[in-house]
Length: 340
Image 1 (cartoon, helix red, strand yellow):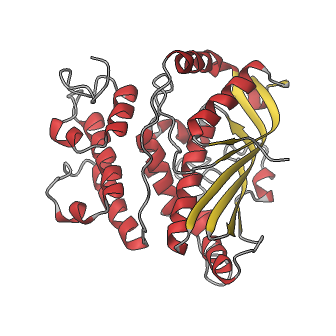
Image 2 (spheres, one colour):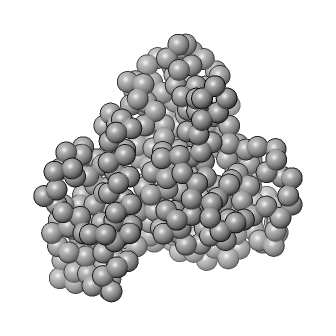
């Protein structure tokens, strides 16, 4: 039997929140975290590009979503980059420097036996045999359980790619998923990885499926979930157009990474006339603009984001910035169509 298919991730997200919060099967308190839990939760997405939750009540941190996806694509595991966007992640590091379980990048792109990464092997397998069932990247390692006090055990078990009829499908298998935050960020990153891989293969984008052993909502988040569900029922946002990733090579990702690092270190504002930025595909220009806006929010002492920068940002991203950081926009210039 097939899992329910949603066209938009936002609809799947709401369905999961409603089900786990209202019809949970178990109450758990693993590692002291009281939670509501449902076992064996699955869903599929018809269009993995429609990966962003735009709900006003959810206040999606779109900057972190892209930062985490880039962190994976660059094969990084350091706290220096990712904790800048999410300081809470520092508590999951055993040594205060790196993340072992949560950092999927080295497991994807780190060189393994034979001097090749898991991702390289999977891509080659897909090129050689379209119908293969062996294009699997594994994340969870048995040694992660050796230390009962390990603060960072991989939540994701594996990611499987299937190339069928010229379209790349992806399936994620997770041992557990926090339905409020983890689900939102994981689906974003894994569908970005799926789209990136499809572009590298030169094939179409297929469906995405998400399978979770333990889908849970921590009790501390239950009121937040109720607010999100209530807001969605009263004010369902009009779906914005999806953004399609262009064919992207490692050289272009390296350029994006250079801008991200410079902006994170507040070396200088993004120059909108800079030739390097101008040569990026519009998709990646928008990502760099998000990093620049985040730099302004972090380092300008509460001053609003510049109008020049904001005007270059796509309207759906403007709305997300406004929802997440309501004081960041100029008071007399809300996003187009936003409440005044």
